[in-house]
Image (cartoon, rainbow, N blue to C red; front, side, top):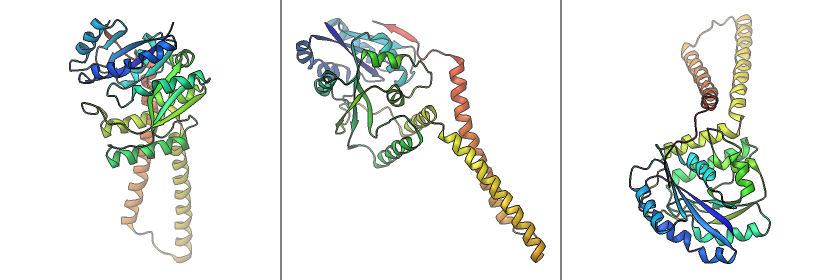
Length: 309
């Protein structure tokens, strides 16, 4: 029989472990007809609650359930990569433990693989339940990425994605430390079917993604799959050099023709402050790319395992 491996990153999700297991296994009859067995990999991303204990209870009842616990919190990106390394199914799917990625979509997703697609990705068409300010900046991020990056990143894209082993191996061939999975999925290519669904609120618990974490995550995405910010920094440097040269010519001509003394120290202070701000902003852009390069050349492991069952 073939195998479908479900990879479930978890961080303080003890309330949702059992509920997710039941929802996922409701697809068992459908996949048995397709001669596909199911397995679940819970990736405990350094949880501080009883997430690992809840998974161990399931393992005692069902040997298709597996647990991989990190030594500390390495982030969802590391959890996804670790799950892909451990799971050996012919098909791989990523799902959130909070049930915002409905497992009930799996039969429909698999049907598209039968039609010849290499992967089936999901995207939310609504953001019901999210704070308006968060939804606004999320849409702005996806619009910006479409303009500055050659990699396809869909608005509202989720990590909820079903793929063949060939696609999974392609993703595993990219062992970069600074990971942005949404960009990696698009970069590897392959024929992908996009499946839309309405936003589903968390079943239990609270989101682990604050506005600040999402902001830092968006910076990771921009620096990982676009060099446009560097081009912007260079453009601003050239622009201000030309502006400074034009102002010098203007000052000399005005002095030669009208004999006006050079005056206006308040405006001079404003100009110096503006230019200094732009310089620091551009330096910060370069610093972000330098920091990512610094972390890559260290060759630190993406994650460390504390326990595997």
